[in-house]
Length: 132
Image (cartoon, rainbow, N blue to C red; front, top):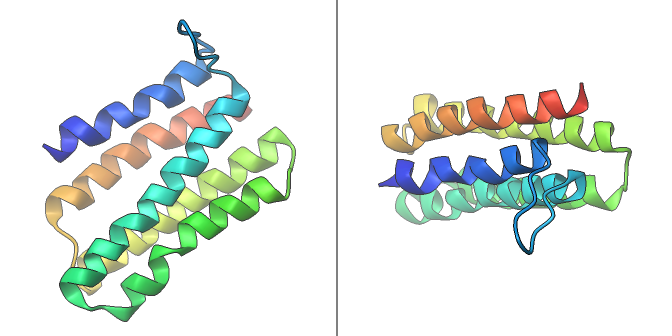
């Protein structure tokens, strides 16, 4: 079930990358940046649930970091390429935390960890290709 919900979340990145417009939405560079910020925020929100199940203090502290990071990236109003570069770095930093919580702390489930690997493998190319 998580794959049916998670993987379609990649679609807006590629609609923006290919600059595909739908009836009422203009999928352009700005939409790409905003959607990336939203997704980055969601990645941290998962760790609220991790904390509630495990009471791991690192999880609750980390849970707000991606949202604050995304906010700061947008607040600095950088050039597009710099913004996308920071989001790429952010996704990989979050993935490093996923590795930590999966392998060391053993408090995230295998299905979620595999989904995160798949989604990062889908998100990173869209970001990298957009700045090339």
